[in-house]
Image 1 (spheres, rainbow, N blue to C red):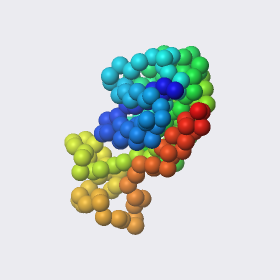
Image 2: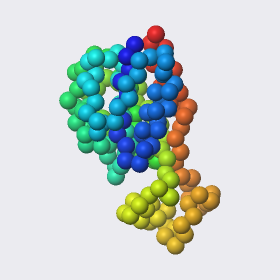
Image 3: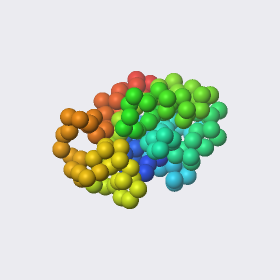
Length: 171
């Protein structure tokens, strides 16, 4: 079986999740991993497509959304899974309903892979926004647990494994 995994990423979180999924499926499947910026192939040449990315400023990458919209018919002819990476699990249902075309039949589900926030990797406006959100502008230590704020988001490997198991069950 041929599996296509397409992701969009800003800081590498979605890429890390897509790579984790790819590692779990290889060598059982012929997996093609593609960043949406690299002009991914048409899904018609694959048996399974897994497509997703990070939510940034409340939205998926525009190029990823355009790919999904332009390939709805092709995606509906194969097994399809969608995924989101973000730090706000409580907004997952809203993101799904607003970001993915409703016409896509994601028979393998829509998955939440969690997110990851490494403040030391952020720059400029992104770091400033994080500081404002965390309301600790005077404090630059985000790694120390703070009982007054929720923990920083993390990738959820179990969710990635569940999707890999669903794809393996197709054999």
